[in-house]
Length: 138
Length: 215
Image (cartoon, rainbow over all chains, first blue to last red; front, top):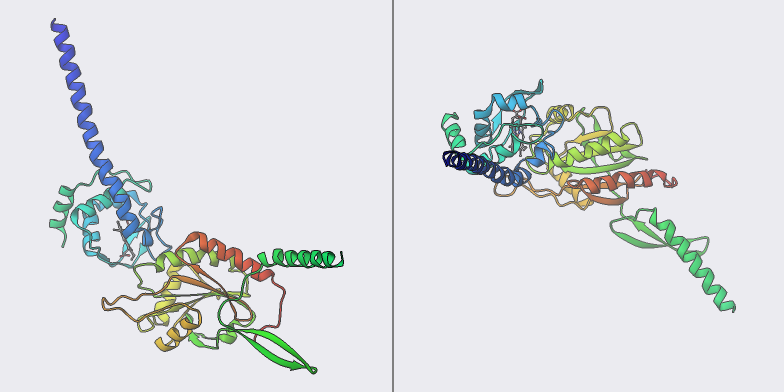
């Protein structure tokens, strides 16, 4: 009898962790697929279908280390645009990216897409994180 | 019976004509019949419109006129260096055309800036460097607004003044011009498939027998 209860409790625990995980997975998938459409509409013309950029005019979005090190700044880039020089894949760029008119939730979705595509794997960037980042933007 | 043979011959001739036409590009633009008298006989010829002469400056500060393109096949488009919308796509696609023909001295690409005030010669040079183009295959051209908008009309491209939001509107077309300065095709420069077709069409044009070259 005791062992039966243990088994049932064990099963419940397993079920809970699995459903938890898939909730997260579901949220990620929602962000990611909405982000794909936002990327195509707002970023792809400049950064390219595969995030390859354009020669020395527009940087690629394939430098995972750069993206990881600038995780908070990415939100600010999209919100306020970029002007100045930056180094991606060891190459210098000094162009200008116009500010986007994306809402915080759209920024979260498109960043989830970018940072988990083109060879990047940074996981979910959700609305809460974007809102926190916005407060830190100058 | 005689009639039948005659009809057959006409059909055969016509169909052979047609199959040749398929590997040929049409001549676009206005055309008008011109009747001349040669050796006492009246001959009707079709005259196609050509691109009139022009004068612009390229990224090396060299003057570029219609003469600079004599005997050359070329592709023209309109852009500006700070364009946030379709220009990056157009020039990403145009780079494929550049790479295909950059060693051919009888081929050119000319990109007219529609924002000549900002896109001065040094700005165009910097853009060319960042785009990774060198040599004389691809010229980025600066001219007055009037000149640029006038030549755009000749290329059938609609280029407009800045709209109230302060943005420029322009068509992303690539225009193919032959050695006689006739328009031979227009392609959506934002569509990689059409640009592939442009490259194929340039090869067809290159294979065309040389006629009298426009001076």
